[in-house]
Image 1: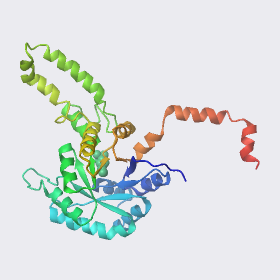
Image 2: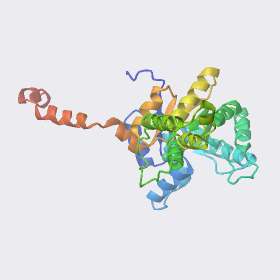
Image 3: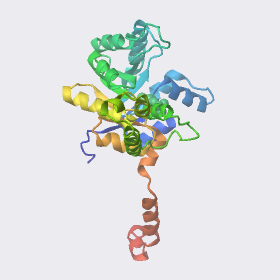
Image 4: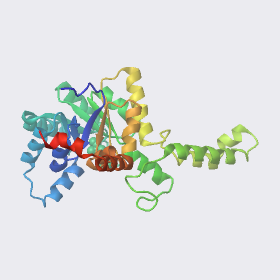
Length: 308
Ligand code: E4P
């Protein structure tokens, strides 16, 4: 059997057993990631009629690799307890990984900022593998890796959304969730605009201090991150530089081009929704080529298959 030795792993980002089964049948899935929203969607699709424990066991039996299951607590002790429950209950059925949010605060002033990291530290000591979720900055990724997370999940699509909203774009009006965020084009436009603005100032210092220029620069990025893919790239670079053991899972993936771009920068794993997996295998010229080839089959060639 030749399946090759790949270092890029593909997970399915879904809790829908139909999708998981189909994708696993294609033979290209190495793991799965779930979260409470994905579980809610799967339960709603089944009209609420789901025996949750059996359902999760079946996901684990189906997936040939790690399956991330998320805790629902916000305090470290609570998350550790829930992680142990998930790990003990479901490990006999497959490879369980526990998802812990990097920062479980629900409100400013909760004083829960470090509870995710505390939980990760403890679970790592107990040998329970953690996927640190809701990572939106390289700084968070560094802390998660230091705490002992086995996987770190930067949310690329949500960072693209965040930047688009900062720019004043409206989802559903200016862009659809699945649209590719063209940050290269945006960077070129931003540079032109900045040049235009900067030329109005006599000195570099005046331009640097200008609030207009700062505003223009700030609203097209998130504290130095220019896109979701850029977030993933920066984390991959830092982890490689310091030889961190944690693997990076590019998450919140919205389209096939994002998958290509995170692969180009050498991410370890990309977790892909079912629809995006489908996009990855499609191209109009492949479709056209298939139709041409099928139309060109001569009877002599068809005979090979039909008269054995
Ligand atoms: C990752 O593990 C999450 O389940 C997921 O990628 C979140 O994606 P979303 O931003 O599309 O909800």
